[in-house]
Length: 183
Image 1 (tube, rainbow, N blue to C red):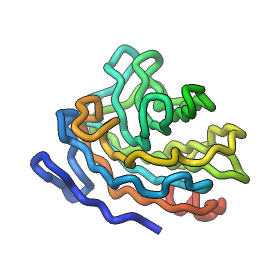
Image 2 (image 1 turned 90 degrees about the vertical axis):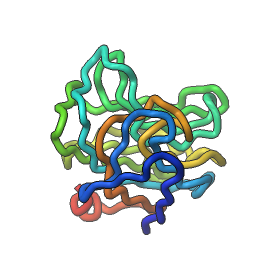
Image 3 (image 1 turned 30 degrees about the vertical axis):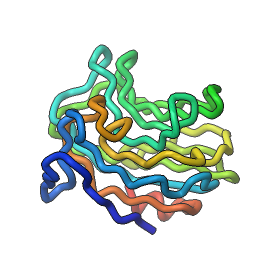
Image 4 (image 1 turned 120 degrees about the horizontal axis):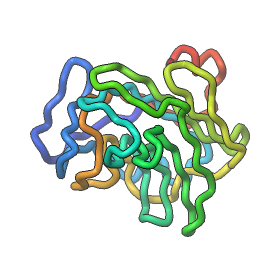
């Protein structure tokens, strides 16, 4: 189910809780251009921020699969409203934008985000085992681009400052029991 992680560049620091990201250049994990065009995908991402995040904070990326600015699936903390946002763009068109209800994130607190896409079930975004925020869009993952954890791009400097992990990912539809177990 999961994918092996290769840490490229940086100090290659980890903690017992996961990988430490600094928001600096080369503070990310690139899983490479895997699962291109997958019609089913999910990722479970536990994380803990080093600094609080609220509206007005600088946008910070947690997870991306990005071919380019017009073809991407991204999970980021939005400066406009403080919410964790999942957005899918294809051919320069925004297919959906869904957000967590939480708009203020505490430093040092452990959170868990689970998201999934499916060509039969649509999009789901779940924070800490709460109610799913959904969208009916059936689009596949971008057909190219690396999956990046901790930033928007390789060598970017717009990622999170904090600890992420362990991240698990898969390419099937999750049952309600599997979602509960992951949360």
